[in-house]
Length: 129
Image (cartoon, rainbow, N blue to C red):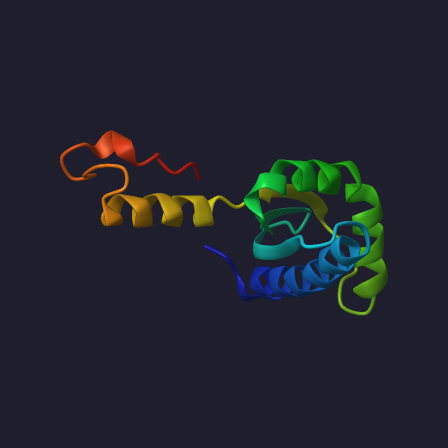
């Protein structure tokens, strides 16, 4: 169970990271929208899992790789922005958020584009947590 402190720190990280990544995307990649969908901080506040959603989805893997390659400078910028709120910035681990893909699969199945998921459950991909 997440404590209030973990939730507050996750909220601060989510807001500032969203600004950092959107600013970077605006400068280097026109037409790409990056959003931070969720941040989970460990109980000892040393690690943070950050889930990133990228539109268009075709560029998602390239963007996530670029973010992971530059995680050191991103963490440094986050530390600069949050120096009055956080003593230590947790180690950042970035993951792609596939919620939109899953929703799109369900929507297509409901429209009948892929067949009937009730009679054939293999149509829908299993979610990975």
